[in-house]
Amino acid sequence: MDSDRAAIIFEALSSKVRLQIFKLLVQHGDQGLVAGDIAEKLDLPNTNLSFHLKALYHAGVIKMQKEGRFVRYSIKMPEVFTLINFLLDACCVESSGCCDISPSDYPQLMQLFSNAKRVQ
Image (cartoon, rainbow, N blue to C red; front, side, top):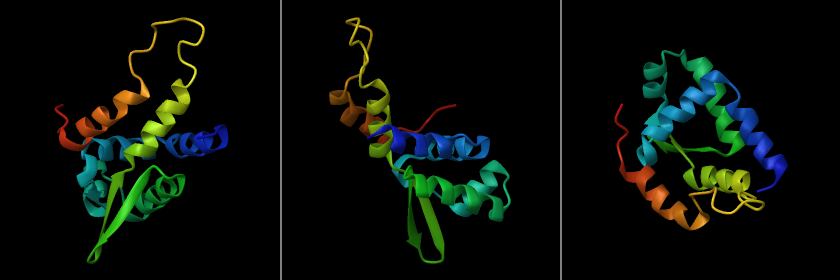
């Protein structure tokens, strides 16, 4: 990932509503949610939601899958971890031992996101 790609993602996430959508979808892992459920949980009108989902989709952080007349949205966790790797790329270059997560940990983290239900 390069700085331009990261900036596109951060621009998409810079909206409070989009950040709420992103966090909600992270909670639902690979299952994701259909648009109507997202709108209901966040109390958003469908037209407003559609605008924000489109921005997140074009930024590449969510995926969508048609299910009959519904569209299911979910997080693209590999893209999220690529962004995290980009951000932490030079972690501890000048000081050893400050980073606890390495790219080799990502598969295990992705498994946690895929299988765990978030407890609030």
